[in-house]
Length: 430
Image (cartoon, rainbow, N blue to C red; front, side, top):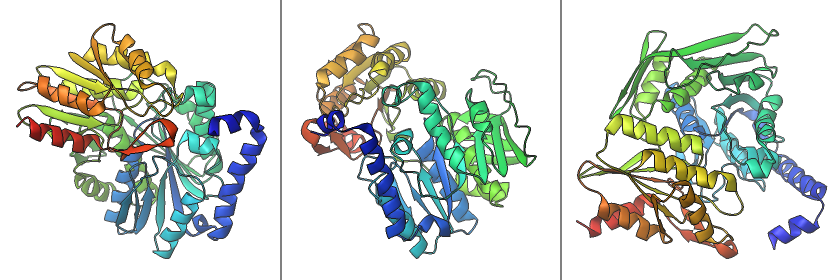
């Protein structure tokens, strides 16, 4: 019914509706963002982790804050899960969240800002004080009708934010974001990092208030990562060198608000895990890792990181791809990446919405070029992976992370949690 209405109703009617809702929310909740310093975090990957890191840093510095991520809502230390399955909710939800943050006397609010949220004008009537870009790679291409439009959607957050911009200049799209005007810019990178190609960034000629943050002396371990910034040691319990970029973004936010590096180091060391992000569920006799990783870039980095850290005897992948007409182009590419890095591959159901789930599965499996096994039932797929794993093997389950639902035909949602299913099925074989 929703798709039929979209075809029948002119686009500008939807635009009016999407504009009216955040305006109505801002009016109803008395323009709450004017009473907060709002930090918007956008990018293809790493938004959730970066939001959590920023919150921890500001808390460590003694500031009361609120944050909204794809995982949860948290206001002044009180949290509840984000059950909406939306990174940046609409229908006045964000304005209501900000109003609650004001009532709890928060100083800051940190928001995940998605390109789809921007496309539907959910960022409007929010006074952003700081904009952060983590990285950019192809995603939501069909929805935005091309990568350039996707990039421009992200750029609208920077266009709307006049105070502080925080930019990863190791990302090949960084020059686009550097062009937007702001009072202050914080740029960050990793020194002589061999795993990425050199990016030549161009600093804007207007504005001299530019600060530079660089990580060096990296050490990637099986229980975390260490690096240094300006001779301050940062010890993270999170896995993967890509989390250094997330940390640098969060540290830059802290610096922009007067939080010193030593305080940020203390805050980041306290983070034990980010739910559903490279989260280890089983450690013996084999490992099971659950991760969100829905983009080709994220999946590639995940597999590379796990191989580098654990050197598993065999790596078993359980993956799928989202339905609902979303990014069909990436389905065979996800399978191809799994085929390159993993020994055994099980392609399964993820969030088919109204699409035929077997068509999605077969599209992903084709990319693996005969190396993949197709199992429609996701629980059965996880059970099969556990049954075939041996000592020192590693199972990596991607696509959903800690999402609480599986979205199927007819707008129905089935309660789901990859982590819980892993624990339940592991108990059955032990």
